[in-house]
Length: 299
Image (tube, rainbow, N blue to C red; front, side, top):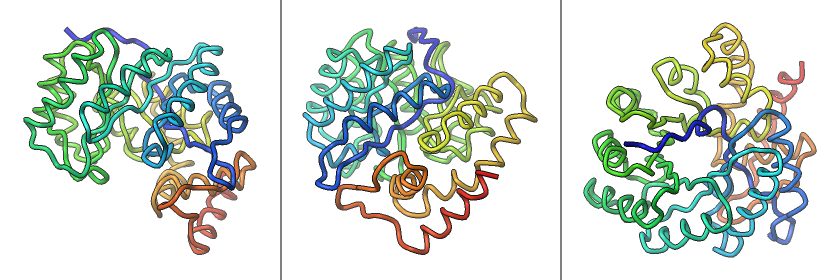
């Protein structure tokens, strides 16, 4: 039976990683961003995912960022699910073990990218990781637009039913039929979280348990409130927030994420707009769109 992890619901933030101009991690800024999250209602922090530009970071840098997240989050009673995935199973196992030692509360493990495994290969990959860290909660991460491989509903359910510590999936496939199949047939206690801000409300309406958000980097209070209201069945209030921040949810992906999000956060005075190659700052046209959206949010 799936481990019962009550805290793995609601709004989680896929944290951005702030950098100095020279490319080094801005520790002070990062700590203040994590504190801002928990003070504005976010109880689940996800460092070193796509939004955190983890694929451009060394293992030492990732472990450093995760350690900082754990230190700040735990001080305020929040939980940390650290990104540990990759396309090398042995390396993903090693990383997952290390974040457990650092005090993370769980791991977010993305589908292997580039090497395009079969569904059996996908199952074996996640199975080996789960077996290597028994009793440590694992959230699968399905994002075919980035990995070029989909964790099918059948594979997700097979993993959930065979490994008690595979406790959730972050679904960013956009395939509602697939997600509904997972929700309808999942074992007791298995959580399904939206991996796409804009589809969160309809997914909660069909049984999803929350969101791993990009938009909550910018507006943590509003995003977390929207999710909580939806989970509580307060749909009128949830919809009001949803439509207010929907333009920003969508604009965060005009160009490769997290470039738009970092521009918005720079405009809000939260960080410097520095990214690591191959990501670059957004174009002037995108800046103008984002500025207008930000102006509307402040009304």
